[in-house]
Length: 211
Image (cartoon, rainbow, N blue to C red; front, side, top):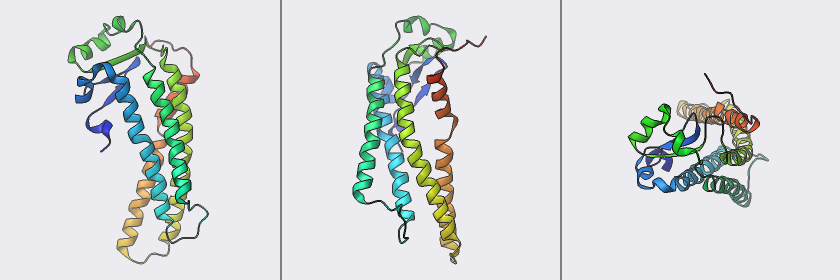
């Protein structure tokens, strides 16, 4: 399981902020940016690299231009971590809003403060303040990650479907179908509305409050 699922469970708020109520967040209330940075650095590149490695395993025994050398895979991994490191710096320099103490007194957030845990408020509703720069960096990192996952997943699906036509064994056919389901799930993951919401936040400079 990724670190974020076991010790750190960070939830986004309707406001420009984040809330965490898991063990590490309670212990390190003043270092929540570090936790956010670590969770991003820990699991996002691993997911992309895992997709790439699965793709290469699918191509074993095949003649394909998509087969990458160890050096190319290592270079791709380094590029992925470079873009993720930019997110780390973005979150580390994103500080609490000067109005944070006033914002957390609103009814929507007061009960979460009483519950405990850690909360970071980057700005009022629809006003991300300093975190908007990190959101721009996040869009850049997603733009570098998503094409890799989509390209490898689509090619793996195409290769597996072609390979499935020549299968006779029921066991091998079942395993191939399971792998197809995995790649289809990854495609759904990288095309979920979260990415589109990030683009909306970056593109829209001001929101209208919901009355």
